[in-house]
Image (tube, rainbow, N blue to C red; front, side):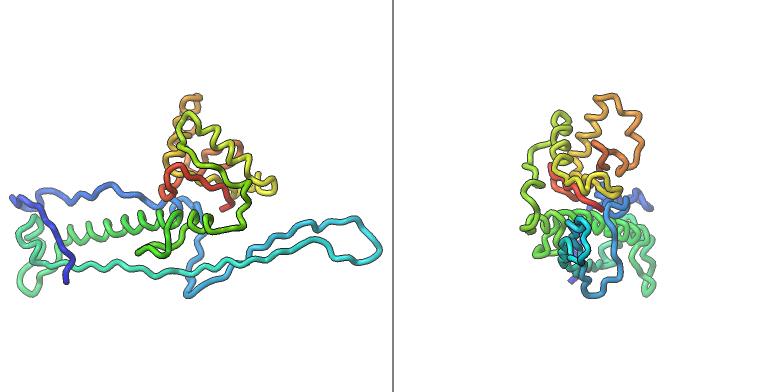
Length: 250
């Protein structure tokens, strides 16, 4: 069965107006390099993050093994998804694009509409992917487990690194970001790829806070991942739920 197409038109001539799509989210996490992408995983890939500690001891004449090496496993398994749509050319005969359909056996979807559909689908896929990256849930249709979903299920995350949530505004954003920086382990602080990934409302609140402090000219024209707090880069995302932030290495 063809996808239901609802057309509201007052056809009064040739291409009276272009199709206009609602503004859609982009996928800044991918386009701005917020994560490393691992392409060409056909089935699954197992990552083996390791934790090495306590390896240096006082020297002796004997060999004594020192330190601890803990090797974990994290499995990346792609989830296949698709977009299936079907349109009936008859729906467009009396619309603005009727002259683009052609005649008889040469009938085809109007090019302006097909171009619109392609651009719209790409934008919607990007929007959903941005949300999935951060808060998707695999059991939901069209989603996979995002970072916040995986973090919530990770019993190994130290309690001291979890910050109580609150509504973030320009008035308290300095205090709330400060709590996050204070919870970052010393071994991670100062790493080049350390970021605080923040929801869009937190990023806007921080930009406004900077403005009240007279930093408007310094920051307004910077890339989204250049703004920093206490030496840690701030990366604004459209996928994190409001008032949510994660400090981690890229």
